[in-house]
Amino acid sequence: MKLGVIAALQTELKPTLVALPHQSRSFEHLRFHETPSLVFVVGGIGAKAAAAASLVMVDRFKPDALVSAGFCGALNDQLETGDLVLGGTKKRPPDEKLLDLARAAAPKARTGRVRTVEKVVVNAEDKKTLGEESGALIVDMEAEAVGLAARSRDVGFLSVKVVIDTPAEPLASTYAGCWTVLRDVLIRPGTITQMIYDSKRVKIAADRLKDFFVALKDKLPAS
Image (cartoon, rainbow, N blue to C red; front, top):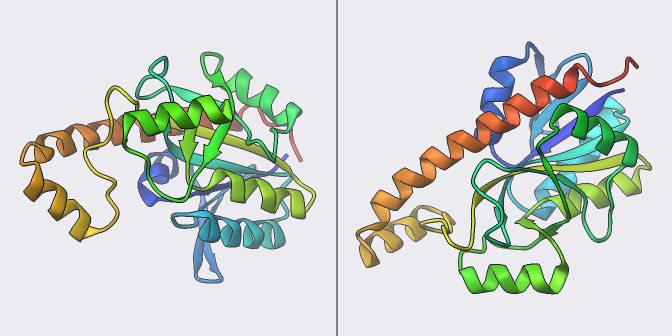
């Protein structure tokens, strides 16, 4: 079995790519990192970028399924930073065989739906409302697009996300560009301390993804 893994940020995949020997090559201005059973790409932030990277992945590497991987925000306070959540979206449920393999690789992971949105959600009440309305555990910006791309090419799908922030401990900023970050720092000087904390949470989450993919590669059946 071969899986195509689409992430939004280089930060999300950096520890994984250090841990797994791979070969890299470029197509359509995207850099793909190939192992015998896993192919990784940083597609960019948002639905449009994720969909484009997904289609190139399927057409070039012919994976059996697409995996939307990366960081997410929790929609309730039962989840904590570093928690791994496996599942799908409302429009694209997970491939059951692949979900079973993922659970075997990460027995302590939670299973639940991801709600995809257009921008980073920081406000605690907004997060809780999203969770109540959608029934989702987590929120991201790419999973739905990857899932729909998988359906359009008739391949499997799975969302693999790691929690960074929760309603009780939100991000210090939406991090939507340098000017946004500067504005947040000027308005709330304590934001700098919170951003240092966010950077620590990012490292925890990226390492959690690395541990998952290192374990998953040994669970995947030979092609």
